[in-house]
Length: 109
Length: 116
Image: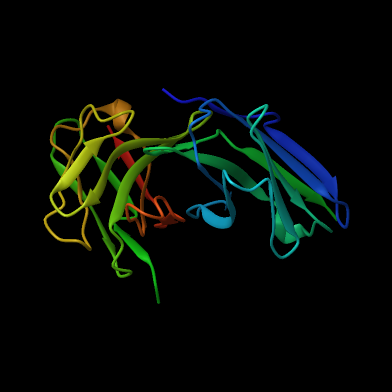
């Protein structure tokens, strides 16, 4: 099966700093990638997506970077806020979605 | 409000007692899927469906059944639950067509199942 891994299971950042969460994927044929945020007791919520014909996409305070050469995906959160504390998953899609195990982000006030 | 609705949200049952977790979406999405989430393993796909009457196995289909008789509903059936099916289950849906392919998955709030 697929292997989608996140580099660090936990990450702590100071409020106001930028956060970078990384993800490695294994299937070079994957053509669609999504980042999700999951708060305790809730289902995953969409943050941002990117297709394989792009290498960068920006949203509100978030940026996703895709490096297809090394099969690496990253999520950058600018000016991290306490409300950003959650578990973040990456997902890759070819015929079905495959999810990483998640990075737990803690924002220190 | 556009959403995916799962029921029940919490269930405690005993080994061997058949149960069904319902999933309904009101967004006219073609693609629906079920996942289980276990500590340290992330989300693993159980079954998915590209459209009505079309279902396929995901990575962990053993012990589960699904059906897609209507576009909006995608129930997950555990014919004879066992303790190793204790988990947090998510249903999700997304638009899908052959030209644009996959799109954003919208998830339900989750169903926490305990099998004793």
